[in-house]
Structures are given as C-alpha cells and as structure tokens.
Length: 307
Image (cartoon, rainbow, N blue to C red; front, side):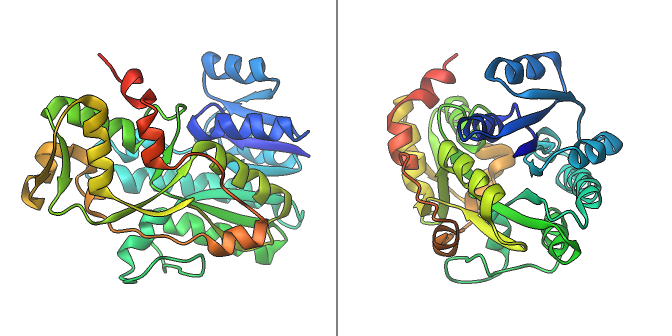
C-alpha cells in the first residue's frame, strides 16, 4: 500500500514511517523542512514538501496514495499559552482533515486521523472512557467527528485517540519532557493535591503499530484508543520524575498549579482513565513495550533533558 503520512518526521510519525516500511508498505511523508526531508529519505521514504496550510497539496497527495495517516498538528501553537492557541490549532487541523477527506470521498481508501483520550475527561463519565464514548463538538472534537462521518461517504475512516502520555526515547517535546523541565526549574517534581488522578499511557512504538493496524484493517467509522495502560496515578509519575532527577516530589494546591506546572497545570489535574479493550479485540492490537513508569526508570528522559 502507498501510504501518505503527515507529521512523518515527528515523534509518532517517524516511528510509524519505519513501522510501515518494515511491513512492506511504500511511504510518502510530508516534510516542511530540508531537515525533515533528509530524515525521511534516510529511512527509505518518499518525500513530498508541504505543510498543513497547503490544502491543495494535501488533496493532491491524498488522491495519489492508497491511504492516509494524519498525525501532523500545530502543537507549538496549541501549547503556546495563547488564550486561543488550542482553538486555532484545532481549526487548522479541521481544515486539513476536510481537505484530505474530500480527496478520498468514494474511494474506499483508509484514512486514519488523530485525536486524544484527554478530551473525554471533560465528559463527566465517572468511569474509564471507552471507544463508544463521544462528544458533540468543540476544538479537536469536530475533527474527530468529521473523520468518522467520512465513513458514510465512501472512506474507510478511523480515529486514533492517543493517551496524553505517548512515551519513549523518541519523545522530545511531549508532556513528560515538559514535566521533567518544569521539575528542574522548580527544584521539585509537582503533583496537584493528592495526585490520585489517572493518566493513560502508551509507548511510541505500540502507538505506531496501532496506526498501521488501523490503516490495514480498521472498519469504516472506528474510534480507537491508543492506551496501553488504563491509568497511571499522576503522583506516581511525579515521583518517578523526582527519582530520575534526584529531586523530591511535592504536592501543590490547585491555585498554585500554574506557577509550578505552567501550560500543563490544567492537564495535570485531568482524571482520564481509558479502556482500550475494544481496540485490542477489533484490531488484534497487543501492546508489548515498557509501561510509563518502567520507561521513566530507563533514564533516557533525564539524560536527554540534562543541561
């Protein structure tokens, strides 16, 4: 299969490119820069220059391939601290998905886009979120819903809802590196109140495998959960980071969260237990890589972030 991958040189995208190539697929990766293009060429992928703002380029590239995995996102904008950063980044994502989707209508080709399990933390479930749980609308939720709706227009569409913590030695700019950097700055690793809130997690390579399985066999209209661990207590994450840095872990009150956790203050309070039972059964996806706390114990996060 000739697969178009957006975000192909990014954290998860780069792992997916290798996963697809190893499985015998031909990969076309979207590259914004010479550096990204060189990285893709080095592993044997075809390069197409462009970005999320090049909607015509995305349409043409999608038409010329047998399937699309969409992982690109304006993360820097979303997490910039700007009051409308998250909404503006989500609007860019929505336009890109609409462009790709329009190009695939009636083709029967697979289209896998990306969302997050953390959005379901605001649904008031009081239980582990499942793949059947949905939200009516909002930033990034609209992208998810439009992707699923493409199933009624002749596209084998699916959405991977990623755990907020996708971890591995490939993770350079995600939540864990940010928490490590903040702990260095604070002199302690912070958690909020008792830190009992749960964060699901998945290893990068397990996530990449899930995207490949989705491209190859996910039924049209599938919502999938990229969560190998249903929920790791945030306090346990903070304590593991503290051990890695030789710093204490310390509780802070919610009113002080922004001072110590910056843009992650809201996310650090999220309780997001997430089941992936349906995804595992549907796609025969069986995560095998180390869990989050074991990955933190391997120390690569602390060596990579050392000053």
